[in-house]
Amino acid sequence: MTPERLAEVMEATWPPAAVRDLGPFRLRDGAGGGKRVSAASAEAAWDTASLRAALAVMADPLFLIREGDAVLDKALAAEGFAVVDPVVAYAAPAAALQGELPFLTAFPHWPPLEAARSIWAEGGIGPARVAVMQRTTGPKTALLARAEDRPAAAAFVACLGPDAMLHALEVRPLLRRRGVGRHLLTAAANWAVAQGAETLSLVVTERNLAARALYESLGMVVVGRYHYRAAPASAPAPVPAPAEGPRPA
Image (cartoon, rainbow, N blue to C red):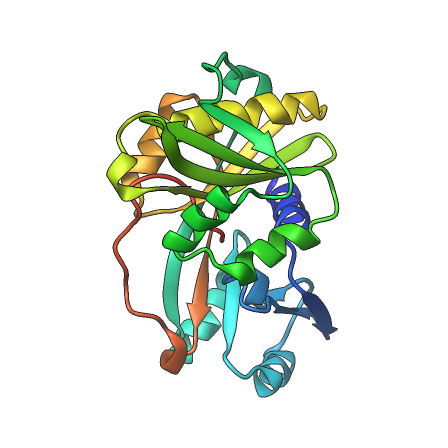
């Protein structure tokens, strides 16, 4: 998966509420749906004037810095913009991640069950992020996993052509370290292959070493990296890494 295709799949499977192009910069309105859907990105050659024009209309400047954006990254650093949430993207052939699951261990459904919504809400994935899922137009599904005979985890998967992407994987803290994340990955792959997808991908914060170890143990490989640059006043304080799974990026 190329960086360009990765960006295309992310945009389609976790879309912003609105997009506006201002010269070479794409400005996104995420309506509370997360950083990536609220970040600006350089889509063509830019200069200082076009960067200033973009900054002038952004209430809370946040930039998505992808591979190939080194000059923009340096320019924003010089302006005092802080690095936020370096992210790693993983992918693998969906068929290689498939497997058999015990009955009702993890299953796809749409629209999301209240149990899935509750799990997301407990992890900070509230109505604004569920709204992102709802406005995704391609094939999509929620996933619910169970452990110890109770709802344990939830995730969202959507497709763009032959590529599926997993988002919003959230595992209840007391039910972590029980293989629930692995079950959700298997359920996501099973669903993706049934939709005709050939690849399953996801993004996870660089510091989430536990989740990254899981993905690598399943044979997923790094296919891209990106981070954000936030204006000094809007740079958030660091938060503890979740124990399992990717958050919406």
